[in-house]
Image 1 (cartoon, rainbow, N blue to C red):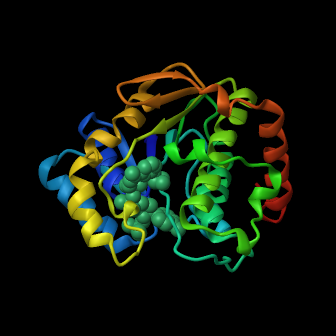
Image 2 (image 1 turned 45 degrees about the vertical axis):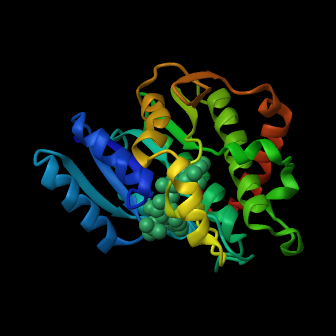
Length: 271
Ligand SMILES: NC(=O)c1ccc[n+]([C@@H]2O[C@H](COP(=O)([O-])OP(=O)(O)OC[C@H]3O[C@@H](n4cnc5c(N)ncnc54)[C@H](OP(=O)(O)O)[C@@H]3O)[C@@H](O)[C@H]2O)c1
């Protein structure tokens, strides 16, 4: 049976770079993407450089818990060795998904949370989970109420940062609950990708002045690639190294309450 490394958002800047690097190492990579045509183009480009690469595409829209479940249902137990929760998005305005979740939290938190819970059930012999977080986490505080934000409190970066902070909390709680897994956070720094276009009139100016100083996607994804090969757990991969999760983010009782609140919110989705 093929043992897949799953990369979500493999069509994006860092997702494509990760997919190529992992395929070049000889891993079988399942590209979990919402846009099949875009994924086929990325897959074709990688195969043109690495003809022996083992790459498949699976359809996954993280804003839909039904899509997450459909994707997970296509995988047999024992067929997943690693999950890289790379996909993410910054929304321009507050919105709800058809399932009633805040859209930013659905894509950046609830979707990866449910996907991880479903797929780690299919890793009976252990495996890796790496969650892509962000330096913006340090500027926000959260509690369980943050999972269901009031639209009046929406801001592009603030809501994004809180959703990533929740993912960081989930990562730590998962590593406490599943000692058989290698569970890590990766922080890419600031990377030149579509993600840092916030949809403002000054984006082209910011692109010209700011993006040359950002990391390339290949450099930004390196901490995550190291995390995917690491045999410890609950480390924070950033820059050229890794360290314990910074103390400002260590709060086991908060992590537990956020986990329990998430289970209540997602109860209808039968994780
Ligand atoms: N760039 C930075 O400076 C930076 C800093 C810190 C953390 N990060 C994190 O790093 C990760 C990768 O970001 P990036 O810079 O490579 O951004 P990117 O190029 O915009 O890639 C984002 C990826 O996420 C996918 N995605 C968005 N919404 C989705 C959904 N509903 N379902 C499934 N996939 C979805 C996108 O798919 P489509 O191609 O279909 O749009 C794309 O593949 C993200 O989690 C981001 O939050 C980035």
